[in-house]
Length: 154
Ligand code: NI
Image 1 (cartoon, rainbow, N blue to C red):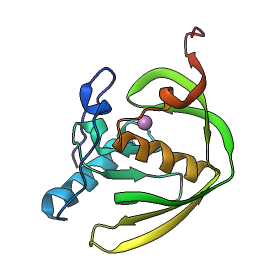
Image 2 (image 1 turned 90 degrees about the vertical axis):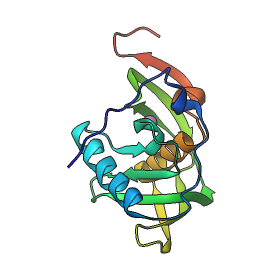
Image 3 (image 1 turned 120 degrees about the vertical axis):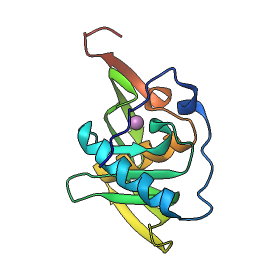
């Protein structure tokens, strides 16, 4: 088990566009394992590789149904709308109301290099969109309709 340090703003990696994974080798497998350990250690619902300083298109999340790994994820369908509160391990003590699609279908590779599709509705759809945004250097504060610091101030 290895836990990475989660980077916070204004670290420039968080604003960079991540590169696709070309080969799923031992390094990528180790990255996935350590990202999952890190997500649980920080009590996060999701984690994107740039948050631990690795500018690659890799995401993990767990909405309470076990860990899911997405390599080179692409949203291929989206539908509906939801408005809800988001936070991010990379932006401490901040939450915001963010409008997202209510249902998405994502296509990605698993750790065996197999392409698969996953549908997410509600919270799962929100997490998928939030984490894939990280791969493009987009943070929830860019999309938030209102922001709240935990000290009650904007
Ligand atoms: Ni985040």
